[in-house]
Image (cartoon, rainbow, N blue to C red; front, side, top):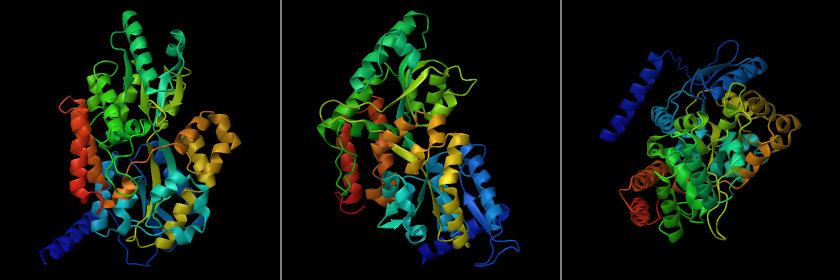
Length: 436
């Protein structure tokens, strides 16, 4: 009884909060005279994605006679998810949600199954994204824009020292040490070989998933739910990363997210940067000090026959909440925003990576950015986080993983102890992989 009362009270509190923020929560089925109003949470105000979401939604308004209400959300993925969970608990009248790749498994009971409405159209998207967005055979979100971990490098500096872009982590480490030493000797004391995201947050999960996958060490939890991180290759991958700290990577990376690492690279203080595709548009702007000096390669391979290029898969999709009051119009909006024409516009205007396969062969897209071929190959070989198999517990899985990996990078645990500890905690969480 107390739990039921608490849920009802939570719902009342959130509905009241939404009303207090100026929301109009109409009764189901009601509409304005010139069409219904569909609400969409599509990012942080001021961001390129948000501005292009508004642009395309306004076009949909003109085509349908409906209206769109835009809701801004926190920048961080974890902050946005926390807000969504509160909305879902309150059954708030929100129609369309921008979802990160690991949201569908967590929010599955709150999202509309879109399979009947797309009627095979989903086959035109990247299979990797469809796999992530499909839970228990239901398409719970539609891929909207793609992202994959890639490696940026200073093309001019590699050429200066007679080096080629590295294919393996061993080559990257050696190149970083050499160029770092020579640049510092030449009067650049703040220069580092490699910067990446090492703060204890979801970004570190992405980076570390790449290390594991590139070494053939699995993906923390296997598709069948079995916890697999406690293995020698995982130890080797984590040992490699720990050895970067203080040698080719500053200790500052252990408190850095994507913007901070980009800032170091953009200022000319690093040879290599691990980040997402959006960085390419930043460094190629006319005013960029790095314009024409940057190249892109896939995430390097680990050693041996099991080593492979394995950038973490990122990106965002659009989902329809079960609690929105205009489901038909919401689905129409999602179809429009994920259409070929809109995804093409979003790339040409804002360099947001398409999720439709055909756009990677579109002449105008390729003419603007020849590097699309690199991104395409990187997405095809990308490594997912274990969100599909861990479902609603993924947040906890990721938190355990990045917290312990971060402690290891700080020198507080050995790599061997780290994989054992993570495995023990995840097995306790899931009854040895039986109950996720």
